Image (cartoon, rainbow, N blue to C red):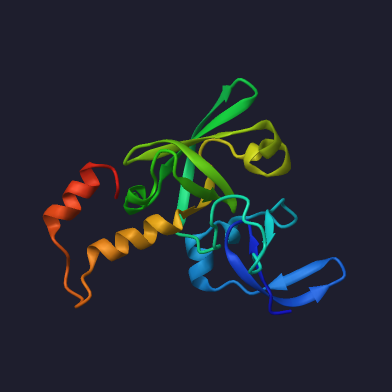
Length: 181
């Protein structure tokens, strides 16, 4: 009771425990920004408990604070792996996604293979395709995206001065052109 658990990406709080599972509340904001409200009852979801201080960090930093949704554009076999290309539903998220950076799709931490202002792709290894529901996504399907935490904070630091005024537009444009934003 009261513990945080990521359910298919979004972090929720356990409200009740039952012998066959647990129950959480989801706010209107969570349902609007994520795919939780459209998941089929009984459908497969990814679950991840919150990281405890002192635990081993074996991947990217994922908080369960979903930034929005992306749509699967295409799938392509690459040897034993698969390349999944996603397009942004909200173009303002593109600035947080960089080649060789990280994203979480439906709570699964992944490395970005390529990125543009409209889309990005990731390559999923066979093990991840089997143990997650990413292998079940088809073109047109929506997925939850959590952008890189460091990119999110860097962008915020660069856009607002300590006094609350907007930072230098020319500097921001240079950083965007260089691919940092």
